[in-house]
Amino acid sequence: MPQLTWKWLVFWLALALAWPLGVWGAEFSAKMVLTQQGHDIPGKIYVKDKKMRQDFLDDRGQTITIVRRDKNRVWVILPAENTYVDMPLGLHLPGQFLQIPPEAMSKRPVGTEVMGGYQVERLEVTLRGGPLGTTRQTFWVAPKLGLPIKTVSADRQYAIEYRDIKENKLEDRLFEVPPGCKKVTTVSELP
Image 1 (cartoon, rainbow, N blue to C red):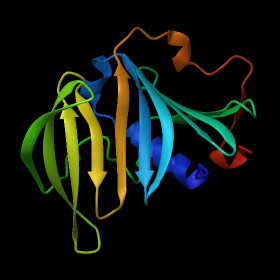
Image 2 (image 1 turned 180 degrees about the horizontal axis):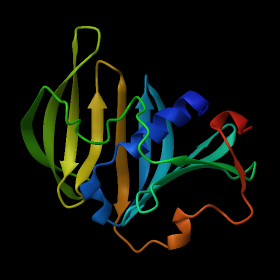
Image 3 (image 1 turned 90 degrees about the horizontal axis):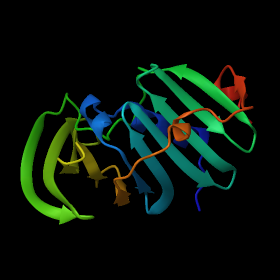
């Protein structure tokens, strides 16, 4: 299994911060799989009200990212080290693709289908960047949840997908820093 490095942590944090405002009405949990250059990195996502949590497990252990729009905060937690970083929400980090970027050059519907039990609208989006000056991403948007449940970028060789989505009540404690966790000031202080 690939190791979740600090580069990946920043990448996942960027994903967390990229969520559109309309999504936060959904309440669900799902398995999350990131495929990056042929390697799968599994995770879990939880969404409730204005809160989101992402869990990842790698060779170093578990990493948890909690986004609290209601408190305007992001917490990155390493349970094995009993430490966390508290950051303001609103950081601009690279890799924000869990929403269709507002700066997209074009958005073209290319079909509808059922994915994971949800009716989805498939959109092809063209963005500035990439080796040819533009890059394309495909989004499978589930209107019922208000977000893409799959995103693929063939030229950048990544994909992210939510699987086994369960719409259920989630406990508020999932979106809190665990009791006794020590706050550190920067991500670089985390072990």
